[in-house]
Amino acid sequence: MRITIAIIFILSILTTIGFIFWNQEWKFSKPTPKPENLIEIESGDSVSASVLKALGVQNEEDVFVHFYNYDCPCSRFNIKEFKDLTIQYSDKVKFIAVLESIDKSPKEIKEFREKYDLGIRLHLDTSGEIANQLGIYSTPQAVLIKNNVIYFSGNYNKARFCTTQNTKFASIALQAMTTGKEAPVFPELATIAYGCELPANGNDLTRIDKFFNFLEK
Image (cartoon, rainbow, N blue to C red):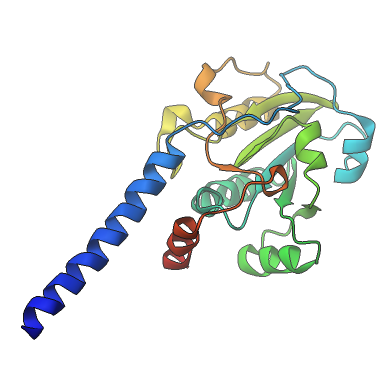
């Protein structure tokens, strides 16, 4: 009898975990819903002086802006790709990590700096204003700025773990920008946002999401 109960208990746990993983894969395979107040941004659009000032951008610097949400599993999976890019191009481009959070304390910046040790500028965007002004509504996303205009805005990759070489959109765009080339023309897949809706948009992780995040830590 005890063996039967134990087997049922174990199967229940495995079923729950399996459902959680299925739920996450299904959720993040779908495009992130666009907010009603979304400002549509395209390559060639000018970046406002207020955004450049908030990000600490000066003298028409080449800039790579990374949008990160600690509560988003996609952001955490993506951090290795971003770190590799900072190591490879830090002498040519100014990297900035914009931390999306509704937490108004500086702990998000402290935790990010201690965990990833990237040595780059960090900006805490609790209101979502920076993201909104740059047309970002999901994480992880990247925005490349050259001569104070948008060079590229969109996904890092079509794959969650950034493993598909020919769809490394942010990396390909960065390579082109640093070599003085025109902005690449990517398929629509590069600009349709996938991942986690920004916290400032009112999105909150469900209990299942939070349990999944607990398992990942």
